[in-house]
Length: 253
Image 1: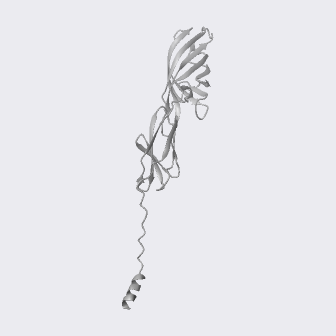
Image 2: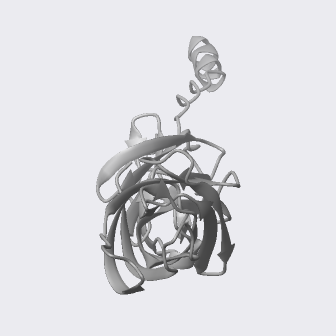
Image 3: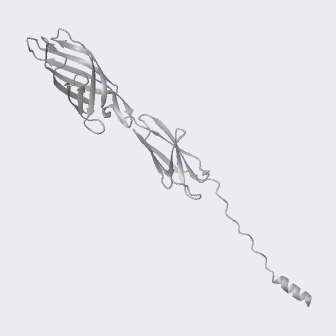
């Protein structure tokens, strides 16, 4: 009888539950997808698609030409690089990060276009060299070097200008933009003397942008090429005179 009770107790004993198993920790992060890079003259816009699945991405790291330039917090999936210049090719890489885990990098390239010369903003102080092309009526004509300043009449881009001489404060006028060409005029004393008195000159300047370069975030004129025409009517016993000079202007400030 004792043996039967022992057997009954053994039958009522249940096995302990198996210990719970935890899911394996992720060991990698999927990379961003569909990275694109679209550039204009002074910026490149990167966009990508967030990876799907675990672990959840916390941020993205952006590289340009192999150097880290920014981090972007998720869920944002775009970045604008405004530290670029026209006419350059840039290589970008983006990687995803979750905690200590980092994905492989995805790549894209962009070329920033060079704006046309007609789009260059004419602004600043220019050193202007001149060369005589033709003249009549003068006993002596020199081809001087001028210092001219141009102030745009708009906040950005190419537009009409205010023109002034650094040597002669009264020499100033407006310069109108016509597409790629500029033209301005001035009437008054312009370095011509008649019998020791100041003659009145009619002056017209015409020029185009010959070269441009990026300055800050603007496409700026670096060199100008054109002509300066001046004429004086017969006055104070002097004959009428006229001259045409080639002008080459270089941005100095």
